Length: 239
Image 1 (cartoon, rainbow, N blue to C red):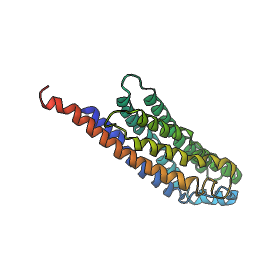
Image 2: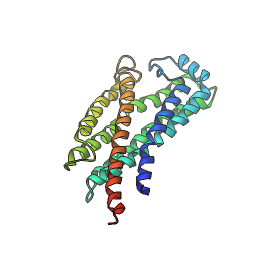
Image 3: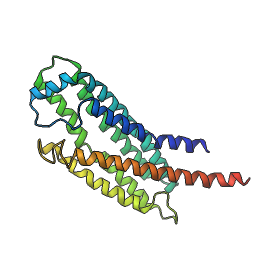
């Protein structure tokens, strides 16, 4: 097995600890389900008082989870470069968008950790810091949408008889991008299905993102295996 194939597989499998860290972080912080956007300052302060250590530890775990999106984006970009070997703007687009996705996980944790750091922080300020974390956490979906669409573009651009990214992967990524659009509305609603804890925002985007990760892991591992076999076959034959 080639070294670069091993590294690619490691990057692909970074999705597994991402899922574990992300979900564990939410559970530790007491954010499953997420807090209500319309919660009073007193209720928000009570939650932070009861889960102070969990919120700090959970925020760190979510931060680490977000960082793992970088190697995952590298794996996808490497695969896309195989599709367009001479000029690869789509690969660079994928890599840049993937890096921004990591940032959308990191930045909200800064506010949550700050809110949980001082036990005597003013409840109104704490409520503001909590919202400053949750609003961008759900609303900052444009980088993810760009990432999905870049994968779709690469799949549609692969005209080989046996494409590395099958055409259905392109359509799948377009649908995932469309399903992320409702999250943009969280800045306009503090209750209902479009609030940050609503059915069309967190409870739609989070499961869809998990499904996307599973699908992309399977697709990329198959592509890596196929490419590794194609490269290794001539070497094995002594060519």
